[in-house]
Image (tube, rainbow, N blue to C red):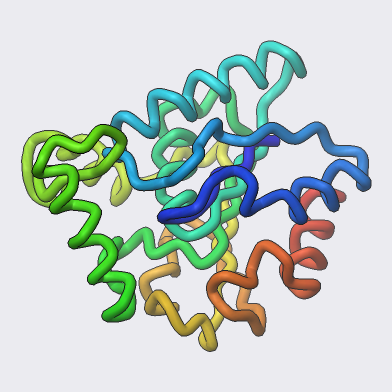
Length: 200
């Protein structure tokens, strides 16, 4: 099971979720992200490498769980590697409109992009949003998922950070929970949904 953190967060932000999954008997690995601000294509290279290692180790298809921007990255990684993934679960991930976020988060995105434009390593840039850099990623984010891949989009109308409507991936089963955006990875309702998915 591969866990992908949200924007400006790292693998450690999903430690509680990972611990709960391990106690249930799942093997979990992080995405190798310290601070999720990188260009999407560069971030995906690392995620896909971890995914290949995980699939080799388990000799089976993996489950991907991504929170917020992590869900966008997980979706594209799954689309590009359908033979390695059985299920993808997104937690409050605005896959229909990546910038359907609150004003404060949009300001943070612009600040990170400015740093990227200035050449600071590990930062996305404005080109990632509308240039050739991440054009394939943007296209894949909207592309239909293969039928062999189970997709579940968990969202909350009380999210407070992203527009819940932007989380309704047309290729996924939609499940509503009561949660804040940041709290989804530690939410009892989310854990109940994950348990039902993983126990099937």
